Length: 355
Ligand SMILES: C[S@@+](CC[C@H](N)C(=O)[O-])C[C@H]1O[C@@H](n2cnc3c(N)ncnc32)[C@H](O)[C@@H]1O
Image (cartoon, rainbow, N blue to C red; front, side, top):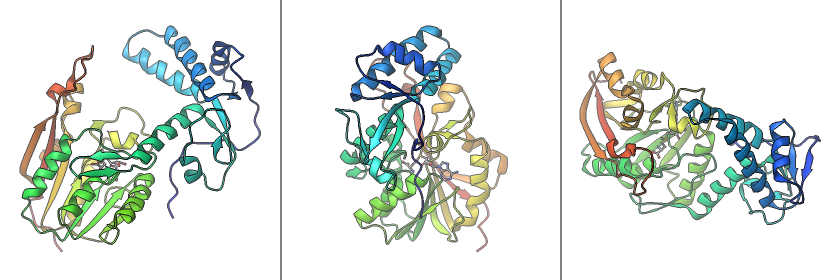
């Protein structure tokens, strides 16, 4: 059975400084910066006050450059995770705290522990999304993303894929969805009539979440999930391989979960193209979703194009694109979205794979 990734907790006896709203939040923030652990003992909102002060103090110390901002985020992350809340019987001790179902689901055998305030904020917002669900227009229903799993907040690439799928003339016996996330592409494939879909992800939470949701939706007899890298050693060959990979090149060491949904490691596309032919039936196709976002923002290469030209083992059967709707809010920064396009690459191997 898979174990979900979840925030770290403290179960041992440790030395903490207690904090209540009678005290000055600025003093508590300074204690955090000095490396002390501070435990909120009265209200949930006391923790918010301390974090506000922490932000103010650390912001004052840095300038406006990109590296200053990065330094600020690092210092804030380190200090803020030293601010703790106590959990008893899977509920936050502090008064007026939100109820977060993940505390029971993710730590079923550990009812009492300490956890950092920012971790709880992350769990809380994820719980709200999970409970309420997110309406996905192309599916005409809601999905309920599991904790720590990527879910779409923009939909242009999904519309592009759905339009292409509605015209798809190939065989629909089977498909692989690499990097299933919260399942949107797998559900689109099943909706469109694919008999069987195999879906993988390197994030265990994605596999657990889609497993539960597909059972709820009654898709589980047609959807087979596998935890692992890329094709996760599947033993099937399919008519269509779909992959909506991360869209930004990583310039930092990747952690798990959402980080790996947004940033790709240098060798991801090379490895994908080295392996994909082993999973395709003769006449099988690859559908890759992408965006020119990193080319617009960072002027980096398109990794799909780079791999195709270097390997020469594939050809582009079709390439569709769609402008991304510009954001409606006016921001001081330049709105990159205005130049952004999402792309759908339909690719086939040059030689038929040997079966
Ligand atoms: C941009 S998200 C797309 C999720 C979903 N398919 C969708 O379109 O909404 C990319 C997904 O690929 C997964 N992923 C990243 N690298 C992977 C790898 N090497 N093997 C399998 N999955 C990977 C991430 O965990 C994430 O769930």
